[in-house]
Amino acid sequence: MIITTMTPREIMEEYERDYPEIRRRLFSYLRSNDKALKTRFKRTGEKRIIPSEPRSTVVNGNRYRVWLRIDCCSSGFKSFEATVYQIIQDARTGKPRIWILSTPSDRGIQYVLEFKIDAIKKLYPGAPMKNAIDSFMRGVSNQYTIYQKPESSPYNFEASFGESLIGFGLEEPGRFTFEKIYRTKEIEEIGNSLGLDGDQDPMKIYNLWIESKNKVEEAPEILGDKQKEIELAWKEFENNII
View 1 (cartoon, rainbow, N blue to C red):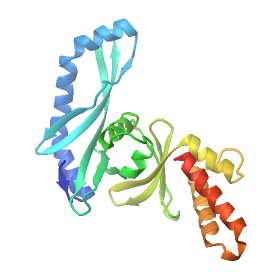
View 2: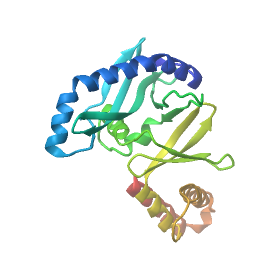
View 3: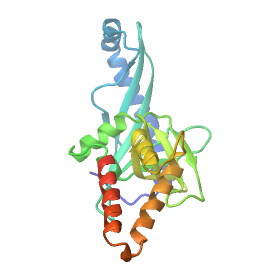
């Protein structure tokens, strides 16, 4: 695993330099497999194909992993989408850092989506770290909806992406760091536990949940057994949704 202390800007500068070669290699892979893709389309009728394993390539010493979503027709592949990500070891903490890199564009707006490993592992309990990361990235498309909420606490953005996933985290220049990731169903269950009806803003639900938990933890000890019952109920609920 590569070790790094790079900033988001440095990460994106290297990726922009490497991207043309990454793209060339992806096209080369697709062209060499065009006959197989055409045969598969005629046999199954699948218009979108995702290979069983992500591609892995090293450019200028940087290792990239890529999930491809290939749009096919009777004449072979038409186009593709790519989720490009890296798994890097942080030189300061020794922990893995996982991020998706936005595709370079003429608009000049580039950013890194970084994910805490614990947030991913909770979605795939028992799976080896690398398998959990690859499975997570397979379900994440290159289309995200990010809502920035600067005044929100404890996290200042939420994002919907992938297979009914919602993430919360902290934004800084050039980077969105996902601290928590939940399935949509889990957020709905939290909202129900708080007595909220109808469609609710996920960030509002999450913040109310955190606030409620904090109130339980800060309640006076004189509540005795009743207080303990409340604490145990919250812990049991949190364990069930994770």
